[in-house]
Image (cartoon, helix red, strand yellow):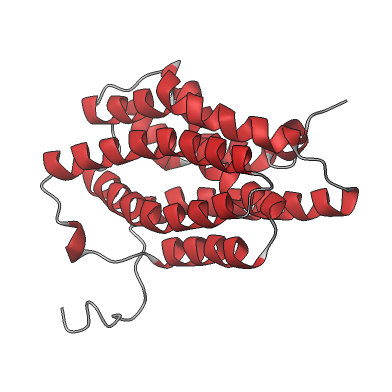
Length: 224
């Protein structure tokens, strides 16, 4: 009998395959990805993590028992710490001032979706919505480790998400997902959130590759 996580992953195999074939990922491996596109991605990922952390806090609060809350919070921190350290490295290396930037349309839509689910839905649905962020990155990182990148900055990104420290936090989340006892109706709702968030993951890389912008200036950059 398949575990919950396996059933969820089978539901997004087409999306994951499309991510691996996306020009952003292919060019990152080849070392020819535009530095501007990578910087854009790092900035947006940093801004994303701020909102994602809020969704995780709500998720931990909705856990079914104290032990699960503590376990989930502790292991989530492991993965978050790894990502924050990576962001800080690139921000310093590229001399980026995060306060000069705002969320892209895709980033705003994705984080708004996650927070809406985190605020309004039960634990099992929330965890299925945040899971793609962890799991897809780990999968991509491990796949790209086999190939590596000629660019040292891109290689560092690959090694971080394909590394054991990051995987530790992800595996803890998967253990929780597999321990859930849910009805078929409840699991179907989980699948919808898992697939929707996975589509947003694809869109996130695609938006970076296109250097996506709002069609009109927002309040923050109006007149700039």
